[in-house]
Image 1: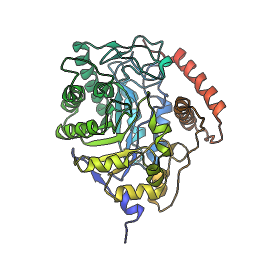
Image 2: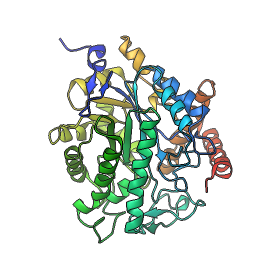
Image 3: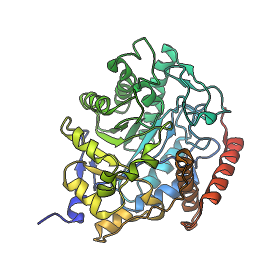
Image 4: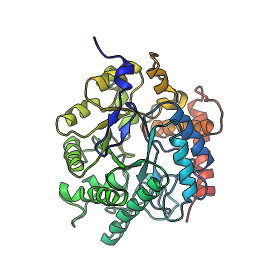
Length: 409
């Protein structure tokens, strides 16, 4: 007799650092664009994360907290640095852990994925994003000293997180952000110790992990979000990802979140949902996780694509993944974990509007959810009937407003 969803997904998981996650649901990182003008996580983020905590995830991972105030993915990203208000961090962690779950902070740097108009971006090499080119300028190559300084900034952000009550951090090494750029043979064309062969390209990630561990100690969680592949010819691929996972395991990582894609090829949002394997098993990266499982003993969380309680249960029961990462399904159904653990058979809906243009769909999907995070944070109901034109118009207006009001020098 097969195990029930409650037995499978309700089982606790103990990570290598000793922390125990109460169930197999993880709230995957999202970029909500709801921080205060100061960069502190304020009322809106507290309200939103209290909702998600009370929804039943055993582990909450916040989204895209920047480690440098002048470099951010979007104007309303939170920033953890020397100017951050410690009390704001404590209020944020209290909300994110209000139901007794664990919560960690995703710390990130955009590198070349910094929107135009906010100074010149920096990157491992002066390689401009291929697309969407109009949104991003050509970056300046980082010096060795600047790279060392960024490693310190990641460690400082981690210290701020745990001092504020969080249980650890996740290093954002996916989706084309700075760490991902160092890993990529396309974005990283350096010839010094930070680039060239695979070992050199992985050095920045490993040095960040080492510095963070030294800063927060052995009992706090350090997770990493890693691409299974960048989906670009000549870029970071499955073999690179497996090799990176092995290095992370040896370096003492506690949890690996498997994802994929970049701004240049947002396959996770546009193409992977159409594949037969995805339709059958829902999760975009489950097949890769199965390959990874044969190469490493790292606890895994697969994010992207899960919608039904049956597929979530089957994924964990198969051993392919230890945790189910959920982000978009928690927008209109923030209590999905509680409902599944209570015995309900359900399927979250895909409700964001679509067009026939890949990059427009990627922006529109993210923008639709950003708009609804704001509604959730302000006690308003979702509008699942909001169409493409309204989503694009509201999303563009919000970007312009936030850039004018929340730009940080």
